[in-house]
Amino acid sequence: MSANLTTKEEFSISTIETGIDWITLTCRKDDPHLRQFYRTAHQAMAVQKSVTKEQPRTYSNHGYRGWSMTGLAWGMREDGEIIVASGAMANVYWRLFHKFSSNVSRFDLQTTVMLENADPDVVGRYWHKLRDERRPRYTIIRNNQGGSTFYVGSRHSDQFGRVYDKGVQGGFSELWPGKMWRYEVEYKSERARIMANNVFTEACRRQPIKTIILATVYDWFETRNVKPVFTRCPNDNPIIVSLTAKDESLERTLRWLQTQVKPAVKRCLKWHQKEVLVALGLEHLFYSE
Image 1 (cartoon, rainbow, N blue to C red):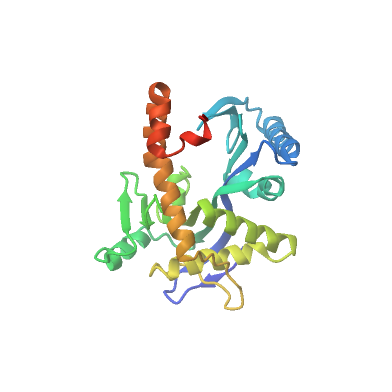
Image 2 (image 1 turned 90 degrees about the vertical axis):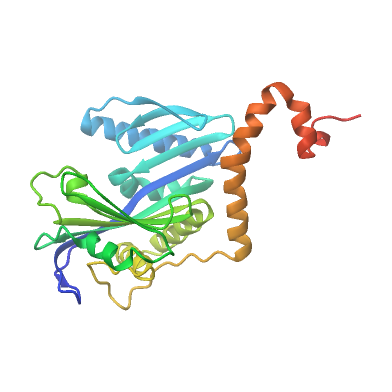
């Protein structure tokens, strides 16, 4: 999608591009769509291989083992299969992958703008304005190539934003620093599942997905005092994912169990299974009189 837009801050925009930048999906072993899930991943890899001549590499992550190529990975383990797609592969195949999945655990939306005139200090102004704010967390990182990234929120939360110089990060030597800026929102866990389902529903209704994504990304940053350099149509409806306090509490508990408790229990189970199960009050599930 392209447009000739000027924001209230008088940023002159030559093009705007939006889409899905990352999606992580799983399909349970007992899901009736498991075979289709497998086939879509391997068909996408076959297309990628025919176009780029790239050879698949071995893939291993969280117990999953399989194959990976640029922008796409597939793996399987005892309880099911996983697909991880990023960049162009995510934007092209996300609907097909989602159709046959059991769950989505990460879902990223992005809007990328090309400025008529390079402005390398976009995130510097965000930082100058917001560096003393306590919530949400704001962080800036600069590199020695003229690029910079502004982070909004915590990487460990279920939603996280970043604004960065895509031209420098992507290695586009023909672009001056500050020429191309990307706004990304990363959703994880239950929030990712709900957002992916909502975007998929809108796509099935043949709604203008690009304008919906643009509005969603815009509102996410604006509500956190990071006004994007692009504008959106007031009539476009963003997708908002609201979790109840109960949902958020459960998410925090599950993250704690996965990141803190699981590794400790796994280490102890190897040699002290019964003692660990007794300590957790789960011995009745494995031992009977």
